[in-house]
Figure 1: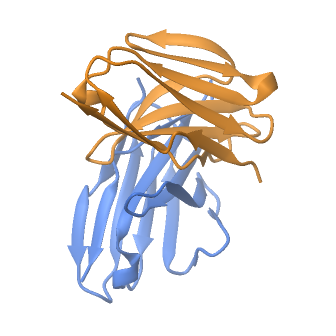
Figure 2: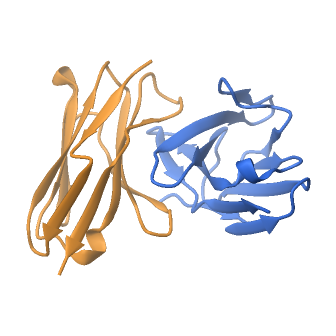
Length: 115
Length: 109
């Protein structure tokens, strides 16, 4: 099956610092990747759609200047949380679409804790 | 936008029991997927099933697209089946999945 990796799997940082999370499709190319956020005991909420070679599309209420997304190649998308604050602490998960048949595969997630 | 409702929200089973999880969606879909989220947070693909019936070991799924629902069957449950089961749909194809709130399953020995 298709494999998506994320790095790091967990990170602890001080308030005000920036954190970069990488999402890679290991055995397929993905022109489209998605970034989700999940709070404890809740479902996944879409943050943004990452398109290779073009600007990301952000969901309403997601600050594009705070959550910078770069999809530089067909196998790599990065999410940078800039000037992180404790309220940004969450579980961040990426996904990539395998086409055909347009099935989505998810990375293992990154747990971010901002002190 | 499309709404996805899952039931029941919580389920406790004795090991060996069978269960059915339901997913209702409010509009036609191009893609429907079932996932199992394990205790470490990893989403594991169970089925890609926009229509029809599929089986994989003790799990099977059926989607009746015309009636806008999907069912996930778990037979002979094991403690390792515990976790949250999500149904997610893509209304148009190649677009983000919309997730239901999940069913939290606990299988006790």
